Image 1: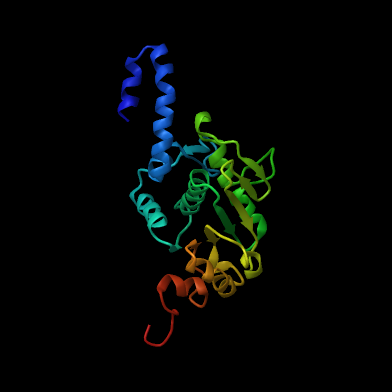
Image 2: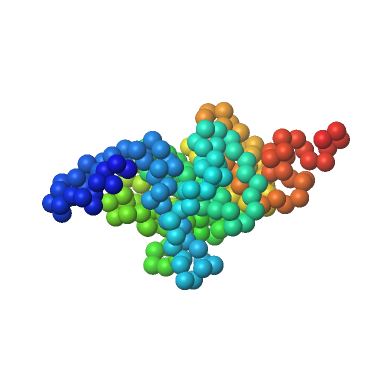
Length: 234
């Protein structure tokens, strides 16, 4: 931040000499401080055709608090309403983990595979998945040589982000670093998925369940409330 304030007072040649050191400092801090890295992340707002690409609103305290929960807690359950950028911050968290930590296997599961693909990476040449969009719109000096395919991002450090369709069989047997269950209350096999990832949590995998509420008689509601909603004495 101090170097940034000094740039305007430097000559063009001095700026060029300073640039590599500044980039190195920014990347080093970004590795350790995801909230700092979010300053360089862009979001897409399809509802605002006059201004579709916007800086991530890292100044919002509830998003800062949620990011810290993602970092500090192994299991996170988020009941959200729409237009709160919860899916965006989860996508950014997946990118941050994958790009700055080697050999991470990050899985994003939605009931429909197409929905998971739209969150991770779309086929090239058109609309981009959210994780793909985040990586593509970083400043050029921060971008990595990622390989984008439908439903998959491969990072040069050996990490991946992979889209999954719903169902316990899609996640069972996988080695997972981070699992995101998106709109989990609307997935058909919530109990089976949770049973499948239980052993992964015991081994240290991070799990994040995100959903708009969908009644009280489902696994997501039980996880969120900490008990079976509507049970006697609850």
